[in-house]
Amino acid sequence: PVCSSLFASDLAGGATAPPPTLEDLPDEVVDLVGRFALSNSPRDVLRLRCVCSGVRNKCGSVRELAEARRLRWRVSDDWRWRVSNHGRTITVVGRSADVELWATGGLLPRTGASTWAVRVDHSRSNDGNGLWVGVCDTAARCSWGLFLLSGRMRCASQDADGRLDFGAAPPDGYPSGTYKRVLQSGCLARAGAAGAVVEVTLDHDAGSLSFRVNGGGGP
Image (cartoon, rainbow, N blue to C red; front, top):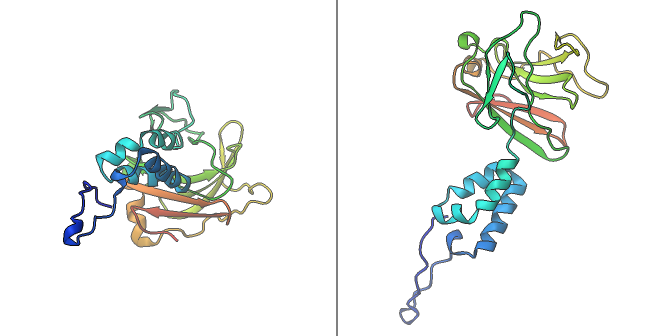
């Protein structure tokens, strides 16, 4: 909706008043609209706040709730990486020859669907080699992700020392899906490039995982 002032109608001339916009509604009503949007997706709240400055000001408390639900990296700074931008950016600064880096975010809900995006600012040779983006179990011992170099699904496990095992079976009741083609060749070249945005959607009810790169590609 477009924000505008609500002018009195010229009833004598037969004109009708324009319908009220979000900006014209009482603060508590706009707050309820924002909370309904939040129940669907935090992104919807951010889009709602972009309508105009009036709505943005009325949705301040809902924005704080949406920010609290934003996924952040749950790792501490050490010799391997640095975390910045309020937990939203992770930068690799060192690595061991025999241990692959594994970074996780917060726990996801158990029902509904979750969608988030990861922007790859830079990778080794900017081809996505050594990078996969996806989900893992609560113990952070088994993961399912899009391997950006090949465009295929990878099911990888790690032991207590952080060493990866791409051949280990997933926990009982979990699928493998490893090496399944996810991205078509036309999208693959962009997946590992600098600035690529990898969007992940996990449908908790259906048990499905899907990916998009730069707004397209992937089932």
